[in-house]
Length: 292
Image 1 (tube, one colour):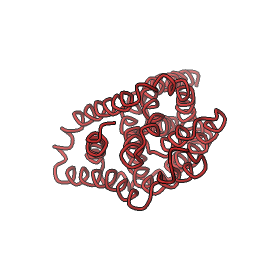
Image 2 (cartoon, one colour; image 1 turned 90 degrees about the vertical axis):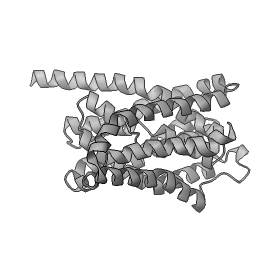
Image 3 (cartoon, rainbow, N blue to C red; image 1 turned 120 degrees about the vertical axis):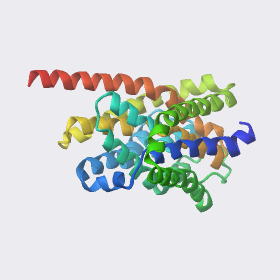
């Protein structure tokens, strides 16, 4: 991938997306954890523990190429994307819970993402690593910089001018979707000679992981008595990953485009799959309500 895009474009694109996230957050969104501790705790357990375990099981079952396997684990460790809020709204989920989960998980991911990624690199031992791949302390600081600093800046802007933040909400969301599309296109173009093979290798695994993520996010909370709107929010938060973050870390910090392929493929598949899943569970909820 072009060095300018790698060193400047991707981090800048991610920073814009995270700044947009910050514009939608307040300190109260973090405080809301205390108001809905059960729903938040169950969703975070799903996100931080069950998803990496599910991804590990899939890549092991399908015997993926080591670099693609690490890329899938990197994706699984990435927090929910900002688009989850939109999907939650469309399918009558608890958007406030989405906002809280995104805020909390984005902070926690600064610690958990390097841990899971380094575990995957050590376990799968991709040959192209040459012992140089890994999220060392300095790279973790870079993750911190591109994730939390823009979020904090966006929150500060919202605090200073909530009217401006609200006006910018829609443009930033549209811009984020465009940025995600450009990042995915850039990744695909850079690997165009291998993309057909990658789709064969990773397409089924990415689709299964997406459906598994959405299902875990909905079913597990329901099992533990979480009401339907919050379960829908949890499903969208867990199923719609921050693919841009995973791609940026793979390409800019780890310097390997192949590691970004699972996130790029997932970024294409997750929207139609999330829409279909959301429509299904919403229709089921309406049917159950009519029966009651």
